[in-house]
Image 1 (cartoon, rainbow, N blue to C red):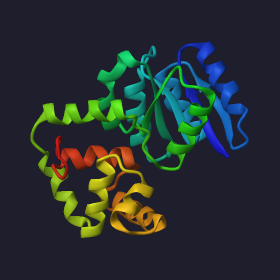
Image 2: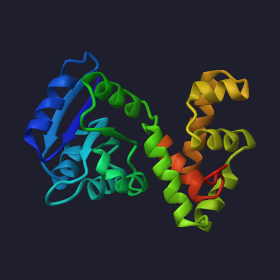
Image 3: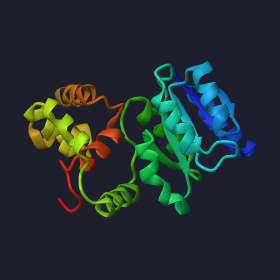
Amino acid sequence: MIRVLIADDQGMVRTGFTVFLSAQSDIEVVGEAADGRQAVERAAQLQPDVVLMDVRMPVMDGLQATRLITSRDDISAKVLILTTFDLDDYVYEALRAGASGFLLKDASAVQLAEAVRVVADGDALLAPAVTRRLIHEFARLGEPRAPVTRRLGQLTERETEVLVLVARGLSNQEIAAKLVLSEQTVKTHVGRMLGKLGLRDRAQAIVHAYESGLVRPGD
């Protein structure tokens, strides 16, 4: 079972998501939070696999809560940001805070459940529009960060190649086809790459690849 915590200051949104997700045989909603501080506290108490996190909440916003959750050793939850089209400016900061993906609040029940599964499995959930916004931010920010660049030396040539393709938005299946490898082999390379770089998931790998200069906007 995938354990989910829902953090949103609107009770009707929390109730709606709970109803949608509870209808899935492999998903269990273990709790709710009405603000960011509660989200952090309940993530520590309940140990969910995924936190559905709204951005705009009282007491503590979703970005601060995401940063705290992903930085704590006693919390292993992945964070899926709940957003609307007018919140694109939060994309870069949310990924840097450790978010694993984004989901529009008007998503269907099927999309919601699938998003939870994708993030729980360690994949990044980034729509093409979100990826474009992210690349734009990296282009605006300019030069790579040296401390980040040095860490790439730990990777093998194949792991580096896989990281580049992950950063370009390819799935494991697409990477396997491009490199003529089995999908399981690609998954192994991704896992080793994440471990060596100390990253939680593919979303952080994408950020790392751009910040290090390994991949540049327009490549």
